[in-house]
Image 1 (cartoon, rainbow, N blue to C red):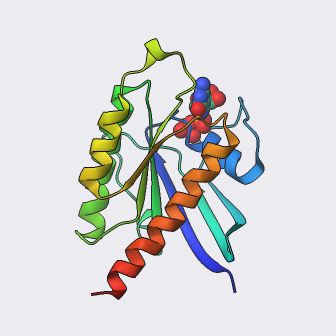
Image 2 (tube, rainbow, N blue to C red):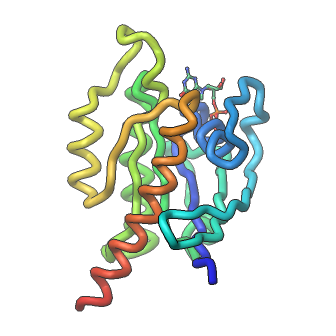
Length: 176
Ligand code: GDP
């Protein structure tokens, strides 16, 4: 029996949420995907012997004024929070998204993978250092990685990681 996992991708507009989702679901990078709409994708995904039926909600994006609708909170197993390493603003919005999630979900552990995307851009465009991303994820108790949506392997590691985080958090509850 596959395990059902519902994931929401959050982050400032244009950081690459849809590109990462599409890279994972379809295995390609699409330059001209319509970014403004919300989309839900389904994919069966195997990690070792375990099969997962994944539903991935690709949101239109959040800014400092966004409220998280109940659909992003109820029945959600985990979150992928994306910023662009070339945008300090998007990193600040990632922090605000986390505090809104905490407000809505309470202080209990939330499976999250924080992703610094667009690492393929030239080094001079980098505005957020890898250490800053790691430090923020550590403060959240979340997993962290940098990625490029042009890299199929990186995109699938993100979704493997979120599944692992969900299992880790579930197990830690089981031990209480
Ligand atoms: P979203 O609004 O967060 O869903 O962002 P999109 O996936 O629509 O991407 C916004 C723009 O950034 C598009 O032009 C993408 O082609 C581009 N993009 C997304 N991910 C990457 C990446 O990893 N590297 C580069 N260079 N461009 C990217």
